[in-house]
Image 1: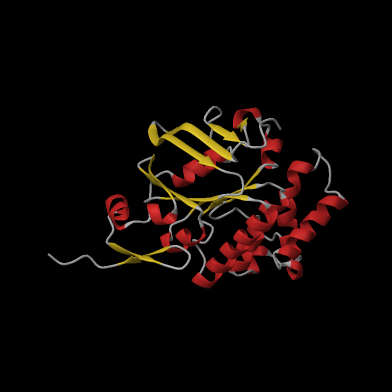
Image 2: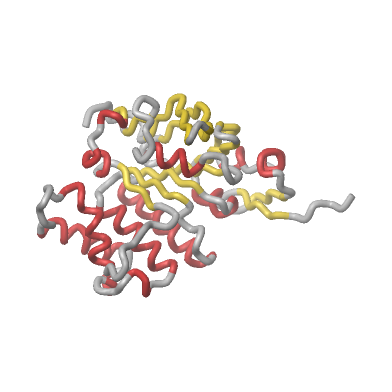
Length: 265
């Protein structure tokens, strides 16, 4: 892979995406430094998931996206999969698939065509399962797991890829608050100990603000604010772009967004 070691993990320049003639992203610029956690927020339809899909190479934007200094159009699919891993909102899981087999799918970029996984591939998967406290789940079917356990398995598959850039699309949307914290604490721990870079989208503004180094507010396909959580999560910006009545309270790890009922006229 080419590019300077000092190059940002993600560099977007004038990213434009249209679907069926409708503009979804209208010229987005964004830089994510290596090791940084950046969370993209915004109202429904703002283009958050589309941005993640473009960074992951699932939507064509060959000239607008650079990963670690290399234009994404210059990366073969297998090479891209060794650099960036995505945890989707609701990954498709084949019926009856066991945890070990699902996490092994993360090793696909390293297995030759028509080949089988090696002992080294299995060792990576077992190490990841141990790290995520899933060692006793090898033979369990994913369908039998709780929401928090399944989310850990989805994360395990992404980590098994060996990628250093994690794209998390609403990683806690189906979880209760305890499992939300469990998953996000795990991601943050892995980021710090393994030098991962995280680009996430999240709906829960309070929990997003507690974990992100920086936040990006998207509205109508454009970046309307970028900065620390305290700079982006303000009464004015949230009222303007979410059309919501909220009160922002300063918390220990970041601002907390509390919905309040609008005053009756």
